[in-house]
Amino acid sequence: SRLGLLPAVAAQAAKLGLEAFSSQALANSLWGVARLSSTLDQSEGGFGGEGTCAEKLCADVVEEVARRELVGFRSQEVANLLWAVTVIQGSVSPSLSAALATWLSSNTLRQPQELSIGVWAIAQAGESGAAALHSLLAEAADRVVRSPSGAQDFSPQAVANLVWGLGRAAPSVSPLVVHPMLLALEREVCARGIAAFQPREVAALAWGFARIPSPAGNDLWPLLLDLAHQGGLKAFQSRQLVCLAWASAARARLVSTLGASSLDADRAQQEEMDWGGENEDEESDSDSEDEEEEYEWEEEPIQ
Image (tube, rainbow, N blue to C red; front, side):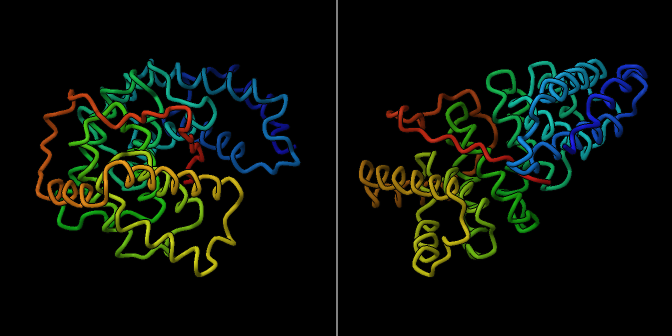
């Protein structure tokens, strides 16, 4: 197994002491372990018996990073850490979320890919990530909604990651925050065409848009229908097809409940609205009434 060296690496890191590692070394080490875990073939059994070792190493790195409060970390290192911790542990810990919130008070995740990874990771952190998520979404809104270039600088992967993160965060975030970004991202998707996105990115887009009762998405679904008619679904894996099926059903239920004309009216209203980031504490009304039918799309982005 390619993970055969992991116990030895972890032991040597413990011997040296993680306090001796630079911020770049900490981020790169954990990123490498997480990347390896996400790309292992099914035949290799993933982490196997060494999963505990990887999780222990991750916990130790997170403890050291939180102790440093991310002081001296560059934006790429922060993004790599967030991605790696989420892949290995499933979510960012409260201590790392708190350190990130402090870091974001005087720093930003500069590149679109870094920002989308940040939203993707912190959206899964729950209540402990609320402060960091607010900062990240404010930054995303500045770039996607208010910037003249919109989301043009975002790669297809970054667009998909950001939509997924918005979908995951939506139940705890005001629609006034989420909807304008979704509309801007939908315009970008339509301008590029669905062919610009890989199957996993298409699945993430569909999941994110379908999870939020929003006027955004009206123009996306015809693109997905054209993709199906043209035989484009042949490249999709079974899990991605399941995600598309759930998203289509959820969207159809939304249109049936609210009506297409209502969604169009809401869309026009949202396009005229300029969110200033002052309504974060408003309660979201986007929770699904049928929670048992919710489909969790947990595919992780690859940097």
